[in-house]
Image (cartoon, rainbow, N blue to C red):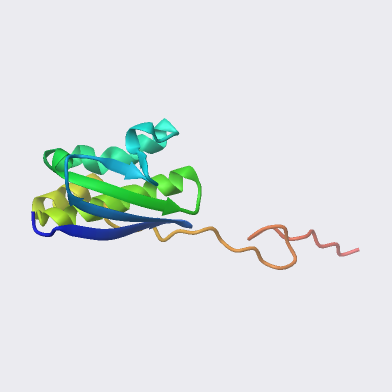
Length: 134
């Protein structure tokens, strides 16, 4: 274990997650709520992916995450990125980083895709009012 406390962040669409990783007994909290109670269940599974891959470190760290913005799946993706980055920096294990990158690059890299902005003369980003020639 390289450092005492590590702060990392993750982003997806408009969701932002900030994670604090420190030595502990395996407590993971999302917005001060234990991850075991987080709903919906599919978002919880997504958040737990980095912990399942880093099984040997799961019971040696405490992770506190605060997340806001976006929908529940965007928040889950942001949280999983923040947790994975925090584990890599906290442990200093190059094999863990390779494991995460081989599993899914999105664990360590923010997803830069965002919603396209609305344009004038239309109802959305691409749709325009119909033009009449007669």
